[in-house]
Amino acid sequence: MEKLTIRKPDDWHLHLREGVVLKNILKFSSDFFGRAIIMPNTKNPITSIERGVAYKNSICSLLSKTNTFKPLMTIYLTESISNDEIKRGFLDNIFFAAKLYPANATTNSLYGVKNIKKIYKVFELMQEIGMPLLIHGEVSDPMVDIFDREEVFIDTELNPIIKNFPDLKIVLEHITTSYAVDFVESNNIAATITPHHLHINRNAMFFGGLNSDFYCLPVAKRESNRISLIKAATSGNECFFLGTDSAPHLREWKAFCGCAGIFNSSVALNSYLQVFEEENALEKFEKFASINGPKFHNLPLNNEYITLVREPYEVEEFVDIFDENKKIGAIKPFHAGQTLNWRVKS
Ligand code: DOR
Ligand code: ZN
Image (cartoon, rainbow, N blue to C red; front, side, top):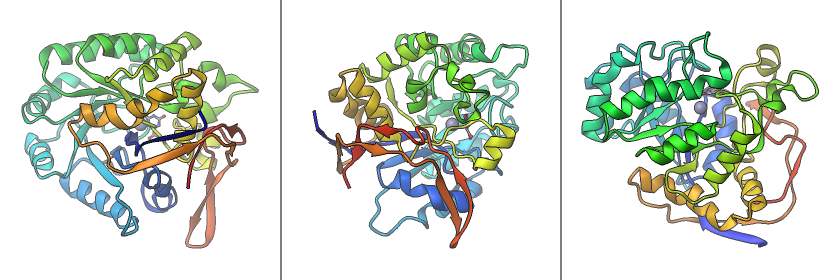
């Protein structure tokens, strides 16, 4: 196959950040995706309607008049969040979903939830009003091995949530293990899968010296897990869909602090396609990228189409970040310096 035309995809898990970084990177999502779920773990997390509205406006003000990209906003769950804020935010169409970060599980999750049982009343409300719960599925207990945190979360937290709230719409985000694949398939929930977890296993972080370019959370796991994720993504199974978890960090921060996150929105479709092609599953890509997500979320499919062509695509070493005309930094994209097989037809 040399050409693939599909309905415009959606990104069901995206970090857009704020300010200058947002300004520079938004185009990578708004050019190629119809909608995206915007993560609320900004420096000042999106814990209220007021912040949600301001954040959405700051995103929309950067879109050109003809751009139809729709940011779907999320509220960051804390132990002190009120049911009233959640209900009004959802019913007034400010928030599409709520995001659960176990406290200290990842970037800007300090204000997340320490004791998940404490917000069961919030889940009860969400189940009642049909608001999706998006979960960073890792325990943050430092005594739990970092490679086991997803499995332990599934057993100790997710399973009880599902038992207590069988009708709650749940998406387990950026899954990384065979265990999660099996769990999602055998329960009535969905999962997003990132491009990076389809391409790298945990060796990538240690190849040629300690390499934070491939450090993200949940961390990539061993190869057998990557293979399970590829099978899941390319299966066409409706419970798996695209979520890039594109998480930009300026080079200097990433290099000095090794913060978790891989920026991939500039190469996301190319990256996914590489995997689907290797699996001989190009015909399943539209389901994963453009159909399974809206179906799960009861949203219409996008009306626009995009065409992907099998032509070499050279990935730049860095995406430069400008403030006005002054370069203030750079972000390393996933696949930096590599040549991929597919690109989006302009
Ligand atoms: O690697 C990650 N980076 N995982 C997350 O859950 C958050 C993200 C970020 O915001 O940088
Ligand atoms: Zn994320």
